[in-house]
Length: 230
Image (tube, rainbow, N blue to C red):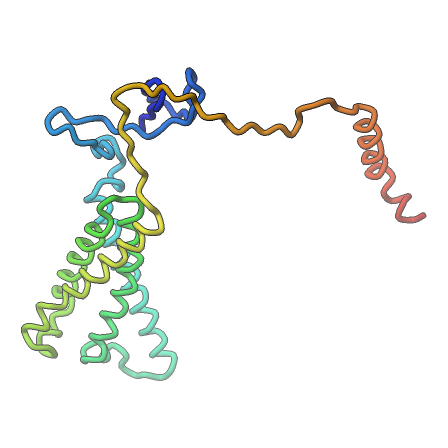
């Protein structure tokens, strides 16, 4: 991402943090669009596919579905260990449907958080991933139409949208989007701020003390066995 100096307005394309002319901290530079003059956060065309909005939604959906399926298989195996002869029949009941929604809710919290991490529209990405998850749930669980009323049956994707949006909000809150600052119109006349310098090795060095300390450390390593025996 391009960086710009707030003093001289010089734009740096390479990865650089300090302006070579003014010695001030660079800021993220958002290129101005030719039509509306609004700042563009990132060029999605040059970003990896998983960083695009559609890629985030797809990755979040795959992760949420994988977690839900894995948790379902884990619960089925647990029921079989405890001696349940037909654990698969549980998923065809009203209790099983509620349990399935709980598993998908946990998966959508994680998948939505991944989709919304570091994105300005993270809540929207998580909600869209939840909507796709809800539609897949209706297709893969047709028995719910026999257990629920038609209104509740077709309202099930709303729960997935809710938990997906919640996960996107969590991801956007924890991993905040990178702030975008546009270049100033005119160069500022204020003096550049003083940079913090690490002055650990500044000043005179007592070479005799350094030599004595190095000799003492080396002797301790070389004659460690003799010192322990003594």
